[in-house]
Image 1 (tube, rainbow, N blue to C red):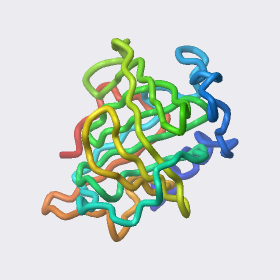
Image 2 (tube, rainbow, N blue to C red):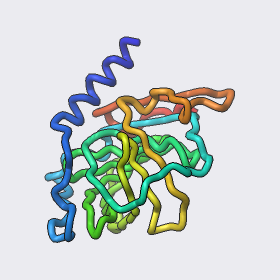
Image 3 (cartoon, rainbow, N blue to C red):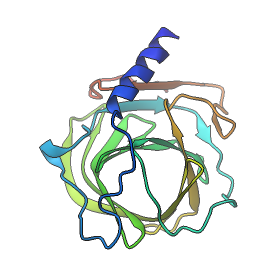
Length: 199
């Protein structure tokens, strides 16, 4: 497990300075922070490839989705959708992480008790970081006992529960391998371009 330990050390370096990221909350006057060279994250800060699944059953224990405080860290989708997906937050930067080595980079803010993510670029194992037409992804949300609950307001989707984790390949009761070709690879601060798929 030497490699896993190395990944955890790298991740802890990546999210150093964790704390409540409350600037940008409230009346929305603060904006979402800087992108580009000011970004606290790079598009390839994390690479993830996995055949594991989350629990797709309906989330019935979510608190009222009236906002809250988000802290830096790695949040993995655990319930409400079976597709493996994660979010990394550092300062006002946010990285959307798909389990097929494809990421979207941008910034986030809380505006009118809604989580608004503004995505500006994309990268994958087949292309370097590229600028996208900027797009927003808005959620009603709440945080309870370390779990982030979100309801997508951009597309009509059910409530999702995200658990804060140290490694995207950390198995749990609601996120594990449910297929015969079990594979999960998670690395930090290495190039995505040219990495082979784990499928």
